[in-house]
Length: 326
Image (tube, rainbow, N blue to C red; front, side):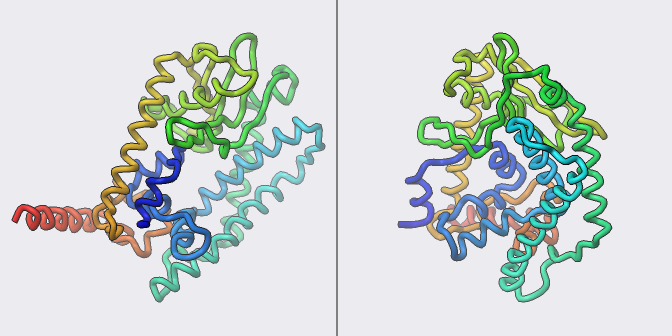
């Protein structure tokens, strides 16, 4: 059975991060999700390389993890030692860097040389990242709704894992919120976005509204879309911002329609690969900034010069179309 057929016969997965990657670079999306997900071997190496992140991104992940850890400690009545904050963040960042070293070793074995990802990370850089994360952490602890939770003004609240799965047709959706709280007859669903934009477009709004689909099938939460307020707590322009909007049945229906269109686009990408898994048929990134933080930039045509690579790909597509006509 081919890799494509293996994928076609198992449940498809949708998440905000997966959707964002597909929109930024279809080729990177295919390299991460388009091959058989066996443990070990070349396919696992592809996935590990795709998961490579810059130190800035590792700082953002560490910050989000410590925020959730703080809320979990409060929920379980565990003592939170504030002076350990910097050490907690540093440990997370350094641990993530160490785990990525084996990925770079695999890349260098493939290319037979030194990877552009192998940058010596100075202690001053780590210190600066920890300082930034600590500043943002202290700021978010003063931001609503977290400050209201810690000071007891919000009493009915829960944290959830983004790994939770919600079914839609044959799809498995990762659409759970990070934080849920009840206020009167209204249920709030919130996600932390460590770096965000102040005015989300329609697609981002619908991504957030998809959380309501998860909520309506949970025991003890409202059944109707109109009883939910969907929120995002995000860092932008030096401070935490809070975006919120009440959901409606139309919002929820539009979100479901968007997910189905996304899954159709994912299936189309797999079909473009063909039985030979021809990556030349998969579009490259739309912006060279995407390539700077991509683990595949050593081996991808766009990693060195995205503009030239896109032109070459267009020429190949035109030549292939001409041969088919002849």
